[in-house]
Length: 59
Length: 308
Image 1 (cartoon, rainbow over the protein chains, first blue to last red):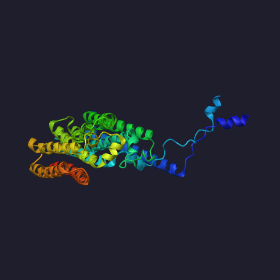
Image 2: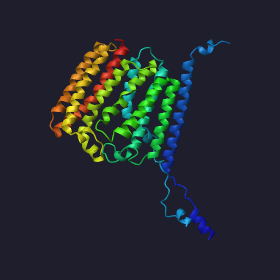
Image 3: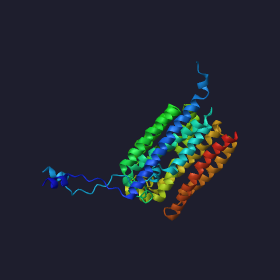
């Protein structure tokens, strides 16, 4: 009886196919590369905006 | 009683979304539209007085491109119901089931916020505000409000496509000027004849889904007349940069010739009778209009690069 109840209350986990896992990995990599490029962009623009001013600041 | 809520009769839980690859999400950004946006924005950057550091200029272009792509994704999310019924759009990522609607909505929203904030922090806030307004205009004013309500949808909605050179200009100068307004006006006046030419040979599609494009609501004859009228306004507008002194003789002469060509194609559409001749004339005008806008902006760019 208890087992039967458990069976009914069980929530099925989604089943991912090989294709879906492959697509998910592809999406994750795309997000990773985009984030890396985003960080690099902020770094480069910061350097450009600072220019020579780092050396010129009052000590 | 409550057991019924957990019945095993419910459908097998497939993940909502998760089917699309990176290429499907890239397709949501409407890359072909984006290429014209990038190009016209680049011309805005190049023409603006004062100059800009190449890295900052590149950042501005990137933000404009991503912002335009984001509004494309939000447009595809909102219009997925009608896209599924039109031959031209049925294979887009959402109607074809490769991307879930909520994935597109989140994707578009996140990119919109990131593009505007990045523009503000790294370039300037005037350009960021213009970019935010452009995204809002395309998604809320055009897609959600006007597109399904009025045959003037693309006339007013066309403003969204006309903003990029103005944003590019603002990225350099931090302001909006009369010159950038002229660049805006060129695209703004170009949009109606361009899209109505498309609508003439695709009106069946639009009619099927109830989008009140001009040929569906006012008829093909009136559409052909409106195309001619807008073309007659467009050509003088393209000559304004020369008259205002921020374009030279090469631009003015070549644009005048290209404009005559545009008027020729528009005239053929206007005089064509309904049927296959009209479709052919409309297809020719549609194809020429893309080349025309590209060449007009190329001339501005080439003149500036050559220092003419």
